Length: 285
View 1 (cartoon, one colour):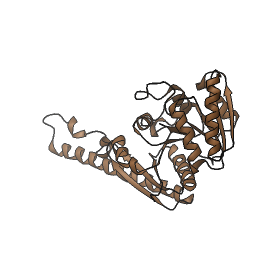
View 2 (cartoon, helix red, strand yellow):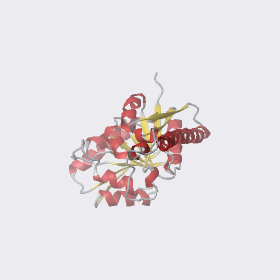
View 3 (tube, rainbow, N blue to C red):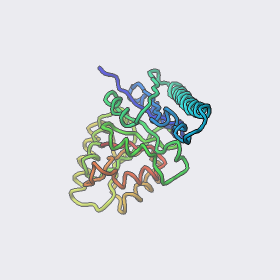
View 4 (cartoon, rainbow, N blue to C red):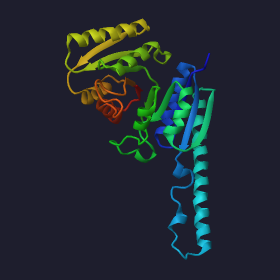
């Protein structure tokens, strides 16, 4: 039987420690191994700029050589930094009790690398924001949307600080991705014994009631005792408020809203939830 694997992406930002904590929590519940990745972009791997190209015709050869050496040295320093980031991440995950931990440093495009590594994984973990966006509250990490679009596996988005998960909210909208989210929660040992709440935001109809009843039945068959709620208002606003009011620890939702153009955009509710919620979010395709 193939062992469950979690792939965790770290970049040295303040979110990296939370990514490691969340990965270790998930690994413990899933009895999974963790593969920690740090990716240097093509420009980073060789230095962000080719300084030699800025030399005008007639410049001295010694200056060209110095600039080329400087460019190469910067690339080496970035690689050393990447290895240090990985070792720090490994220390956090192993300290949380996970024994099977690997670290890998790659050069190239993140999405291309994930396309090669993802088939071996059952779950991806990434920070909400990257190294350059820690304090920009409205700016999501530049790679997050690319990963969600490209990935065929669940993506667990870490908030700034990790804490153990006890209360889970499933944001249900009747669409296929939220149905997949319900089925995943029902089947996965990741959610065993947790407090589950199924929430719909919008106008309640007979169809919505029947759909929520079926979703609650699926969760019940998976061994969960489920509370349900129908809330009025705009999902982008109401869900975020409800998460805070109920002291929710984790949100599970479809990556794309019902009836949206899934191949082009992340659903607006999903994007707003990622931006505003202070808890991790598990996105299902």
